[in-house]
Length: 106
Length: 106
Length: 106
Length: 106
Image (cartoon, rainbow over all chains, first blue to last red):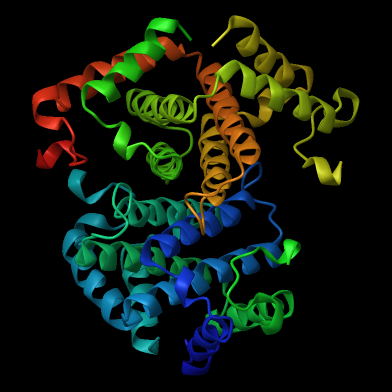
């Protein structure tokens, strides 16, 4: 993701003085709310979805993720890489290949 | 977000042959599920949260967002900027400043 | 649903002095969190689910719905019937039969 | 909850031939989607909410819960009481009173 995109999302919030509403808890609610608008695209039919609508709702989720990183002063690469370290340990390639089994049952 | 991070997330999936499970609908469900693990960090107390836990759950949401972009062959910057065009039009600075009112009631 | 069941759920909360945590907003978060534990039963496979697990998670959602009714002093029959009045008007049988189309596109 | 209410919700679905869409997985998605419309009532302000809107969204969650019971041929009292047996064992009154701590940390 480009620095300009991240900066545009940040500026959108500060230009509107919305940092006051952007508490971590409100961001968590907002991510869940948008995630469910995304899920609604697949509510009754998982194959035939409206791609333009999906793109908008996925973007909404990601924008709130960026907002949450911003309000907690976190770095996306750092938290994702730190989580990937754990995921790679929990799901060794040889055990997890081709299986959707949760790590605690592998 | 760095290209290496995105590539690491992609490789994690392909190394385990998990593309078969990564349908758009399953990704939408997964994003909502992880978003609610994030929300659980704020279930009873919105002020005193476990930051390390929050970082992990937010990373999980973002990883599934990257997976969904991947399985739909979408570009994060493109869909976010396209949505920000709409958000900026829906929430003009002069009207929206300091207000959490939804655009259709502004 | 039996009066004893509703009363048991109410007593569970008051015996533990948990009314203080049962704000409407916390109940809404809790319902979403449990709804997603239910959704997780169908995350990767929608056909082969663990019925015992599904029953527990669905019960969790319903218990928090009862808690929310309780903390808002609402009656289940009343709010459901009032919503069904609207649903029946929005989805006339002759138009909606056999179709999963949303009312605003019928 | 009255038998007539449950029967009205059941008839609403069968009159419209919607049982075909009411798979357990679709019901789980629907419950989460409606739970998040309920959560949206508290997105930016947890104190000042629109009670009429809250009632409608809570009713929507409960209607889908009834639909899910119906499509799995389950009884509300049975699954709730069976879950309450576990909750009462996990949260003994003397340990849990006045505390929002999760059972595995009590």
